[in-house]
Image (cartoon, rainbow, N blue to C red; front, side, top):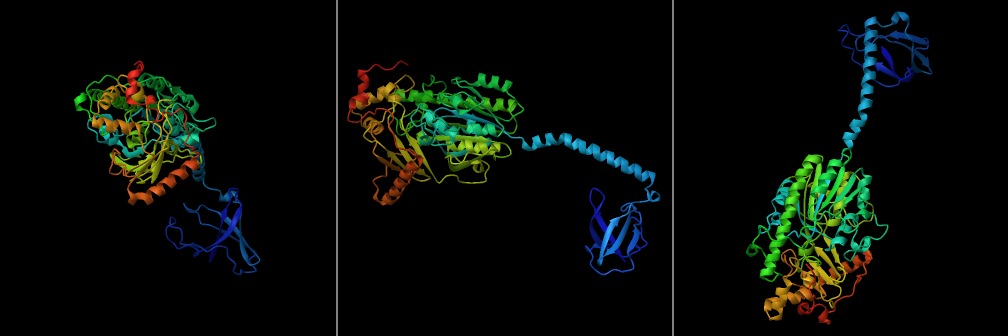
Length: 568
């Protein structure tokens, strides 16, 4: 026979009609085994006209308690409706007791789930803490973590062993304030307004720190992070004046901070910015000299002092990691980088790799594989968009920076095919605008005003452990030393265009701009650079009075004898 079954709504009314096809009565097997059946849906076959209403009752089993159903004919359709049980058909007291117990249990269970829901949601939304440690004037080339065994940095090596080391990370601009403004806004200097050194983003420029806060983070900047005006970048907490040792300020802040919210902590040091400390643990005779440095006693002493400052950075890195392990979440993204290269000739304030290529080492257990290395080309301004992706936030549309989290997590090998670099100057000390385009293989540098002399604090001030070696250089130059003449002239005078095959010319000493076979490539790179400057609104401005090459009395190495040196 055809057995009719229906489903009920929560209110107990029939909501749909189905026909269950099975044999009836069921086979005489155990009552624990319900008869086999299949659902065939609503029936439309004819029924007996005489059967206006049929009654049937299911045989009670543990799976199918006694129910009473009624079916009636309506236009050749079988409709099903429930019929209330009679008192005589009520369940046994034991079954009623069981049902009462289950109802109470379900009510308690649901109440417990409701109470725990906020905790479950919080756990699901838990975000990692973030710690960014930034040095001041540290070139990637000056660290044992990047292969220079003359500058041992064991803590940086350990950080790299625990995480990932990026070998081609560049600052967008190699001077303090513009580099940090670019980092915190995700915008190139011409767009954020901080072009010349010691200048700041124009009013209304959005700080990406604001977006970190919107993602639920407490933000703090301790030490040299935002050059000059850290409060303008919207950090919740700012303690900028910590010099070379931010440890007391970090300790105090972490002890008092709100630990119920995720933290994005930025810590900066003034090391290894000049003036460098007295050399300790490094012998001048053992230092390495780049091809652009003259080998003099004072140059070597300055290098030993620079290494001493880098060692202080390395020690501070170790301290920060130990402190973070105690005071911050175990789910921690920790990274180390620097704003640009060191204050050396052909370093800071230039667009050579020694001035723009910076360390970038990061660890994040469970996300970044230990002991990895990537040659993906990234810019420092990509850092905050990356942190925002980690935080579950979103970067504003239209910025220059873009996240490279996929590189850190080993999901992508590359990031940028080419980068653009810019430098405008440093007040009256360095008035020399430069632009560059760099691929993985080639770099084209455009010195916008080759008629200007290139100068900076080192050769103009010559302070102790901050450029005093220039006195020896000037003396060698004056006495006609051939090597001194080559290096000193190359320092002050630059051609309009420079082209280097950086993949093999690490120190950029072989200018290939005159190679006719490279002319088509050079033309294309020039066009790309010009189009990029136009798109950026980069007018190549000169922000201060220059020192023209034709006015030798404003820049030449011998003029220092006629001036009083600045105080140390």
